[in-house]
Image 1 (cartoon, rainbow, N blue to C red):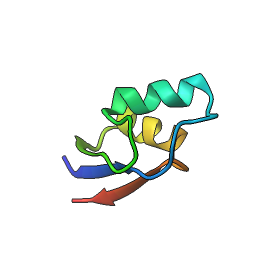
Image 2 (tube, rainbow, N blue to C red; image 1 turned 180 degrees about the vertical axis):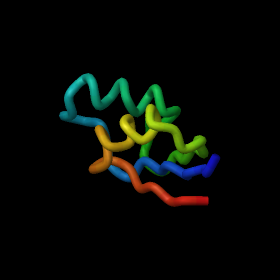
Image 3 (cartoon, rainbow, N blue to C red; image 1 turned 45 degrees about the vertical axis):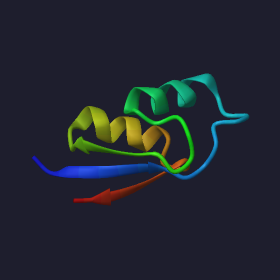
Length: 59
């Protein structure tokens, strides 16, 4: 499967609790932190929920 690199680019301050929890579930939590994940429907759905807070690159 393809991999994606997810980088948090915006803060979670004043964001709904479900968006904060989604970032934690992705392995993020602070601006500038990056993780590499396999592209699955579950990961794509999580990224879609917080697309305004992260940057996604295909590897």
